Image (cartoon, rainbow, N blue to C red; front, side, top):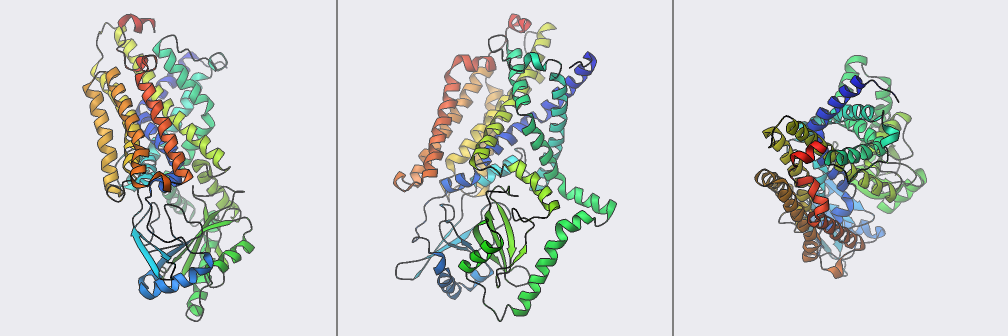
Length: 531
């Protein structure tokens, strides 16, 4: 494809500067996002064992509820029936502080002893996995969620600009350089080949991430603008009106007859849902009285045939007295067309379709994307050094030194920080809450940045790689300290095994000169001239 040289030069400048501005933020977003693909397994892995009897059968839940309501009347306000208990939700019944929209909260887990007596344990799940998700959403910044959402949207817009300009830059030499990775030549060519190859082969994935991130960041503003320009649009009514009407009718019916009727038993709710939504597998029944004092029920679950709005599945509003579906806006396979279109953005971003294969594919693409941004920054640094040496400078300028230190420090600081968070996560409840987790991450992150400003590149990166490897090795150690191997689940052992393999990879990268040398060696004048 022929593109004029001046046009290519212009897009190369745009791509370079936009990449430098948002590359480090995107590295954190992609690296943390890849880890977040396994948020639920990590949450189970980080949860210590709870001293509770075995979960009760679904048929005995009414007996359990009766005893809880007798001893703890406040439990009527908010409680959850867990159909498939996990290490992070070890009981069939969870009640107490209402769950917030995102992340774990303090909860009471209840079960029945062998003699039928009530056993309740209060515990706050570890928030490490949730923090990594927030790190992904807020591109690594510690700020209020709303401000982080808007900043992420701006970065996503710049990210889209970088994708378009970068694609136009590589098009003229696409066929010639598509599979060329010249590791044995000079540093500039190596980073250019790696950056171009990763960007081109994962371009559809990056387009999806950029587009969906912009939608997530500015969806409130989009609705406000739509309302201001068009009033209450037909699409908005289709997306929300049907759900509101159904829920209002259900609430009116509950207010009329709720005092006279008893809610269906959980087993009956499951049967009713199976008849109305075949293929949908319920996971939790969430009861709540915060809407005017009447009892509302939300059923969460998944359907392997359809993608879901959230990484953990979809949900539906259900009448707890009749089992009738009241709202299907977020129920996989039962949505209106406008809602299905909106859900597709979430499905594509979260990879909540296609099972474990897609989940692992998204994780690999996320890690590859993070390395692509790192390679882009390294390419810019090497090119800048070449120009500086060509002008007669022997040492790097201050701007080059700062950018180089930030590139290495922020990238490996994120790697070390995430490993540090996961290493301390099982030590719940001492450091399982959000504030201690934040302090652990940002203290590790900032320490890595300081190391890069205090030491030469080669030494700094080796120190940070070794530190990241050691912190990653500590993950299974801290997990075994809290949960003996004899009580560990298969999924927890898999997390431990992956941590050991990843730690070994980081350590090998640190000690092998041929891998680390191009990143940290001070390029000689002759070497840069050859570049």
